Amino acid sequence: MQTPSRTELPVTPTSSTGCGCCSTEAAPAPQTAVGTGFSLEGLTCGGCKATVEKAVNAVAGVESATVDLVPGGISRLIVSGSATAIAVRDAVTSAGYKVTS
Image (cartoon, rainbow, N blue to C red; front, side, top):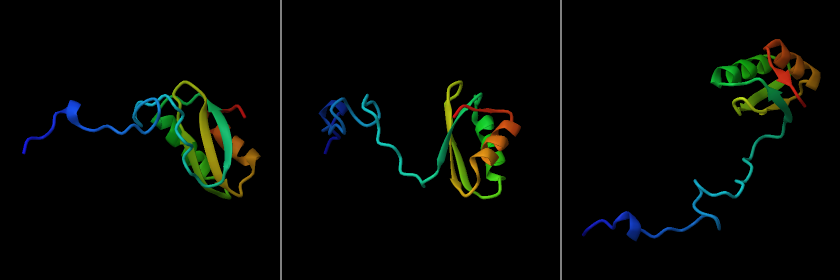
């Protein structure tokens, strides 16, 4: 049996505008633990991301801290736990970055 060529394979689009990897429709938001979000400026690479996550994870009451990196743009920090927003902001600022909201 011969393998069908790429043009003969059935394609089932996952959206009305194409497959899942090239769709222009917004992807559904990932399911994450309930947490507090902060917008950050000044992060440009994975090293910046790791620095902020390490600083915030060291704050008393933080269960987890995750940065969604947007190099050169507004990155998003999601923090879960009982830490205060002031403590989280102070940790980000001490790490050398700016919290915008």
